Length: 425
Image (cartoon, rainbow, N blue to C red):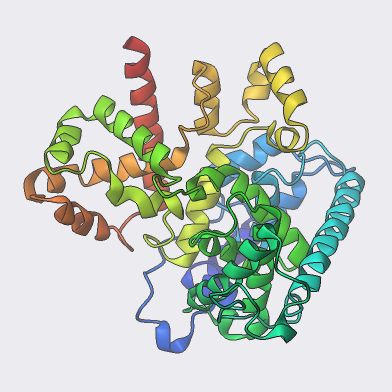
């Protein structure tokens, strides 16, 4: 006879794979041949399952984050629980909080979001209506094209700036993940538009920048409640915010490209010099990878797998308090020693940074991931690339051909090599 554990394992394996993923993220029939092939498959004994997730909580709701991180870093998260797991990985909740404490926080945040959304709705009534706009609301003179769509005067600079970008958000929403059945309904598209519109209103220093839709879209699909989705997106943007801060003279992601250049110069000076000779030393060809976290290089399901691997490896147990009480957390981190037990609550990537004292936020795992892709394509770039366009074409070949777990593993090796060489220097 097969024991309960063995039976569950067999059921899990039978239900896993591309067929199961298609039930969670169904692709429109006419787009089946146009999307990248998905490599990720939930694997029994490696992927964090719903059963293991629920078993990781104490009776009052405290999460054994070290146990969860080990599983995520081995095989990702099962599609049925990605949304709730991501809320912890992105710092929405403290693993050491109870069920009651998290529920209280969730209700308070939902109320806050509803208030912000109502504020936006007073200015542009279509927000929250289940519809969205793709044409400009204001003319060249700054006056409403259709006064019925604007609820208040637009003389205020902040209001004017925000209203002017709403149709651009709408245009990007139409283009977002069009191959997925989820976005065949206007209500789901409107949900994405609403979250991005509210975020842009609250963050007028960066507003809305193309690419934010690619970051937000998976959260819309994974998290049913719109307010919960907003807070998860807000936390994700804490990590990526500077990527989207652009001016007339600089791109937000430019600092990461400079860091990438420094890393490659250290770990592979020969390849770096070759790229310099091709006028590619500024690594602008990696702009898109860093900007939207490899959304174009992987299928939708593989992107989710890559992100949770990255966020698991980058996890810092202080992430929640850092966002909620930044000054207090900074003082606590600088004054307290980290023991081995505490280190287990860090992801592999962040643990290495903490142990070596290399904690600059500019050195994200995404940068080392790009470095790992360059190393994987090292020979082809050195032998075949005669210009930057050749480099772009060679890197373009990774779509559907790159394994997310392998890329992350290589990134960790490059991190180790870089830290070692940097220390000696």
